[in-house]
Length: 217
Image (cartoon, rainbow, N blue to C red; front, side, top):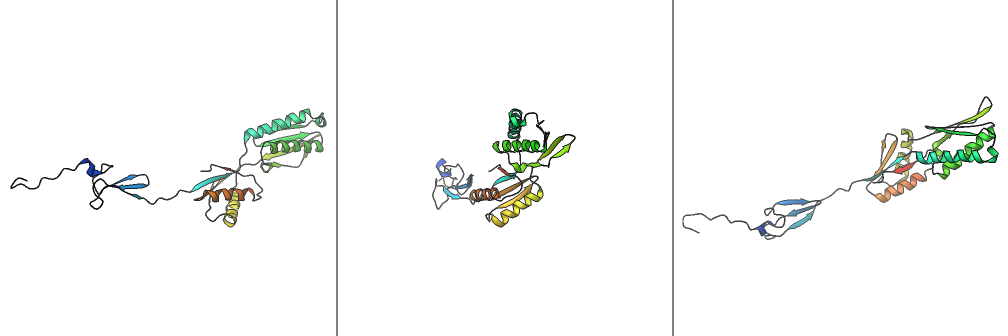
């Protein structure tokens, strides 16, 4: 020190800033960790690491009612090939036609029309398409041909979504939450185990409509 002059401010050495390069007493965040540079109590170059409180995000899945169109096409094509080759359908005018969400079935007799429908149902089951998607009317006589009009049902109506939501509220794990989103139902919880349990409960719920589970995250 030179007489008449004040103290010269000390220059901090690199080690005084700790590994983060921040001045003592400052903070730097690394994800869920907060790194505190050295203070006078801990000593220069010491890092204090503490956990920040974190909030666990909900997991979820969507309940939907959708037909795999590829499997539907495969089922119908297989049914057509079968009635074209089976002896008991020969010369009966049996016919199957898929157009959009409609399946048209016809044959010369009511018995053969119903038998053709049974073939379609059998192929749908084998291709993993639930028969709950199929709404088949009674055979109707048109001229000399018996016709069966079938409608394919997709989507979960608001009424059906409410049925599932109420079922889960009454029977499901208490952590489960539900939200109707258009023709789907989102089910969420902080527990993935509870979501798996909810899926099994819905599968066993004996609903009159088909359901599938997608977007598990």
